[in-house]
Length: 139
Image (cartoon, rainbow, N blue to C red):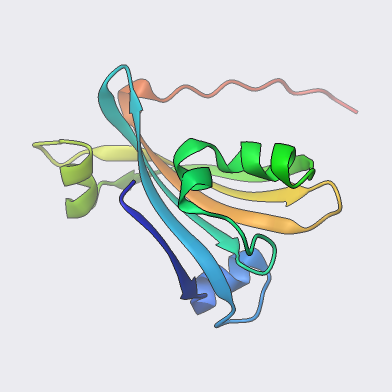
């Protein structure tokens, strides 16, 4: 865990979460480790109004388990955008990178089954540990 705090939503985060600028949001920065290698830097913002009792213990374990099991909510869908981005100096430190590196960035807005947008996240993955697969179905 690199950061867990509540902050007023910036204009950009407010727009992404479709909330008023300045509304309190949980801001979470985490480094995910895969096979003992720091591989993903994840930045997450969630409205405090939706999750006023979200605690550090939930963040350290599983936010989605808290949402589904403790709150009884159903995560319904997400919109994802996948791009490339150069690692920042801080990300290079967290991911133990010695050279400038391009990361795979996955931006996500996630929705509950009641239609509420509950999360905006931006995960930056080491390119060599990132894998994306999908199926397309013509409707």
